[in-house]
Length: 263
Image 1 (spheres, helix red, strand yellow):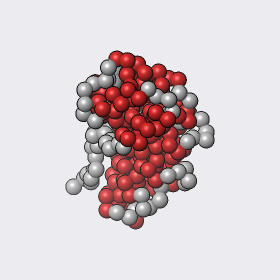
Image 2 (cartoon, rainbow, N blue to C red):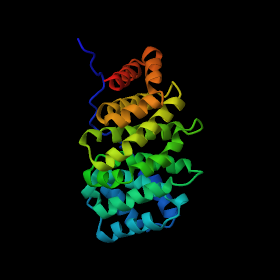
Image 3 (cartoon, one colour):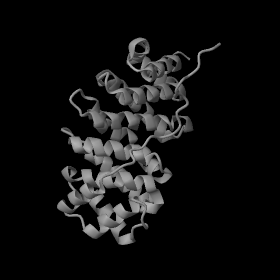
Image 4 (cartoon, rainbow, N blue to C red):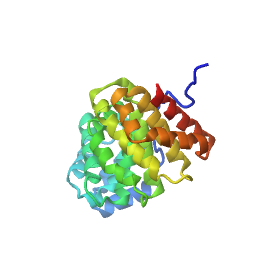
């Protein structure tokens, strides 16, 4: 029988669904956010009523105007708002401001560890809601460029997992063949390759998600993505991990990548 995929197709985006609202609100207040506005958005994220127009307007203003070193609690609040979509006041305009702030937060080196983590998680969660996803996909290459810093060996484990999940969520959309996704898919492959080479063996989740993402993109992304994966030596990496990749699911996902590249 012909070999079959063990982990593909992967079509469901993975999100980071828990938050410590108290800590987020405390930091926002410290940075000068209007407490009522931030509190209203947080309450909506937590299942309360949708925030009022003035609270959403305040949030959008902060996203557009706050300096890079103050963005992380805002990105963290937006990460939860992205999961709730309309119910947390996320319109196209708000989603677009979120995506722009996410890109800006990781645009320049040295990137703040808190920004790498919160921007990565916000990017992931945006894929759970169509309006947010569309806004973030338009900036996906730019955001992935910034998040790629989490593939460096000195990055923190949670930031690496957020980056692996970001690449995984991009891969869930490659089959939909929109121009914006097609444009960022090669970037996702190169960042994924970098991450795979730097990811310690004990970080099983990050390794697994990266392998599944790369296999999905190689399977759905057409000739350009497949030949880029080959040029980056991912066939050899996949074979090595298939043979001795630690956990069974990592070995299986490495086998999927090898199979996707050979088809």
